[in-house]
Image 1 (cartoon, rainbow over the protein chains, first blue to last red):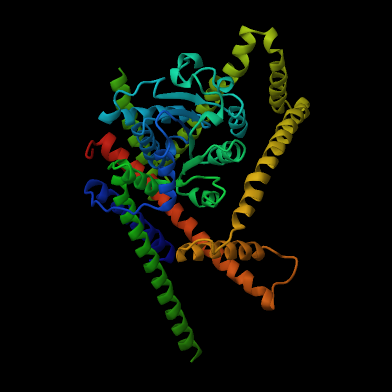
Image 2 (image 1 turned 180 degrees about the vertical axis):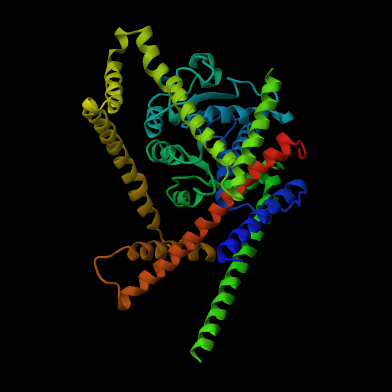
Length: 285
Length: 212
């Protein structure tokens, strides 16, 4: 068997093992828990300590491709805000954001505690606006000018919860659930650094390390949810065994497998190097 | 009718998921088909969405309902038309003007914001008293933040050869960078596994109804 054929075969075995490592825990959940990290707790505390009646904004800056990581965060935060008597505005800097927001509100309303939440009173979906940072900047002056209508075409003045909201300063907190640009960074730069409104965020795991430096003593970012694990931590904080929690078993098993594969790969390289060195010695002798 | 469309959508989703996954075995026509349909659909969706979400409400509807009150919108309209002239070789030079306006304004807006948020605020965030906390782990964390930042930045100082004692902070900087790359790799693995979980959950839950 040539080296190339054996590499291809090994690769297929790795794919198969990984497939099984993810599939089996989804079919037969293990129930492993995970500790809550300080950055997730900060994000939770921001919403938890906001008084009832306060308005929070969740910006749905992601699309269907990252729904597995982002949607559980959105649902958990909406449920948390509603449980504290707050109102939630959904906006979007990504075209598919309004659909993601609508799905999240629908899912949150499936919880019997929130089935009576009313559109326009407890939550609104303002929809997508093109422009990224420029749009966020314009929200600093006037919400109504940017969103004269919501995503379904209802005029701003017909939505009771928006009656007293003028601009970003009227918000208690902002959370950008962001899978890239435009997204969380624009909210940090304008909403926090210019208007001093507390900003928290959720990102895909890939983007999380890039945003952690913003969680600093200047409060540029008040906590961060990075990937599925952070979503499961948030669900644990609100006492919910939600979609992120159930998927964490698969995540953990896959990570253990990858660790094993890295170890096996390293041992294989080490053995090959040792054999090569022995062969060289024999040839030289 | 919506029920049937939903079922068809789920079956199509399952088919395209398998078609894309089949690439893991080897390149094949099903993968190619799925890939090209995805590219075409994304481009079409993006175009239609921009027309309905940006062009119609922000430009055409306003001009159609109150032309005199929105005369200023003729400027972006003209710039937009000039941008399209890229497709006509003889007059494609016209597209340079709207492009220069977009680049100029974006750069100006971003420069101010990035300078404040990414440079000044980030540098200021490292200017802390490492010993202000009573918790030992926090003191260690603060010290690592300061040392890591200084040594990491020093590693990228190329104006003088880093040898002798000047090599030490550079070496420490490399270790900090390696740890950061490791963390980034770990997060990337987590994100990719999440994508696989998402697809398998779709197959098991929405398609096969095996799990709740």
